[in-house]
Image (tube, rainbow over all chains, first blue to last red; front, side, top):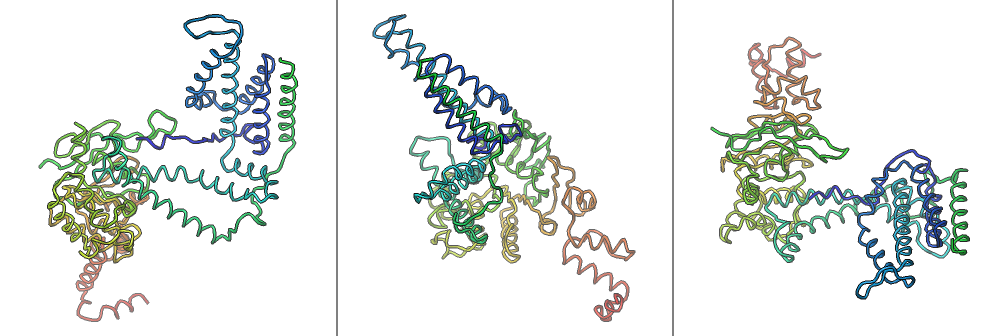
Length: 268
Length: 301
């Protein structure tokens, strides 16, 4: 079993314009883009949305292959959506068999729906591909900052998120190691029925949980030793600063969102 | 006599077919005789962990063969599993794999997987516990209530209880105090002598391997540049140094003494050997009858 091959919100380091944007600008841009996608309503608006995405992808230097690889898990959802839309949209019938009717409107609708989901996922992946997890959580914390006024523990939430992200590879490595150690004592994780397989996991899960708790304890001690006491009055080594480019990016994203919204209202 | 375990042209690639691909082992020919005590030395990332994980079939060779008693361990799935009971592997920091409620149950995990009957399992658990010097009273305790050194010995007993013909240990003394380390090494030597088992010890400590092992195998960048008795291997002091390994401190001291023109023997790697060599040298110079310490001070001041 190659647990190491699992990728989660993978980050491809780079130095493109998109990589260097402020994470907050990218987050706002993504939200604006997603809103725009749901306001898009016709050929023209979809074309604008597509061209925008294509431009950002080109500038980001992220490989198209990497982007498409992320689509695999949602393939089923895509097909499902397309089929449902195709059959259940009333309009001019094109073909008919048994109780199913395919309409012209249905095909158009299905096509738009698939394109919409594809672009939505691509844009989201683009964010995680070009932004390090650390920058992303920093950006989120900063954007959600106003919620602190209503006593939402924003700093704590973002700290939990970054610690969780940080420990995924460590735990995967640990799992690999314990699995090998138990295999060396004759443990068999691959054969047997469901109950046997579940039972076989005990020698893996017990040490894994113990080590996770131990690590959590050690990390808490290490943080306390460095006088960590939550978000109150905490300053940062790397401050987030908006640069003119970030402003421009946000402005462009909002403009496209509003533009698509207006055009969409008229059915373009 | 044919070797009990050997690799032929063993090659292993990690992340094959990706940009991260790299060869951890390059056409490695390694062998161990039955009843031999040998040590593998190499710096972190040299491929020694990869090599030992091939010896009991935890990793599959990219190319090449691993033979146990002359038979390819990958000849069938059943055979691979059977070999794992014959070639016991103790990982680094093995105390982190303990999981059972009692020490007894944890040690019996391996023998139980072998499908032995209760009587035989009981005999093996008690014998393994005796080998590593665990008190019978500890067997009913939870392994998580023990000290670090005791946990380590429980984990080693868990592998010894399978009574493997070949026992491989990856840095069994890492992180232990000198007394704990010496005890573990004693336990391993006892198992080696009483069961006539082959021992393969992986270590960073040159003193440790020089004292324990009859043969050293150096591994560097996925190949085996040197192998032989400690004195043969430590004769390549400068090259070992360049591989980030070095020689025991005493060997270095004696090399310097010889370079200074003093009449001392080569092939010294432990404190005990050094003591004997110094006493012998002093006796030769006619100082043995007098007061060596006083003369020594006189000479150095």
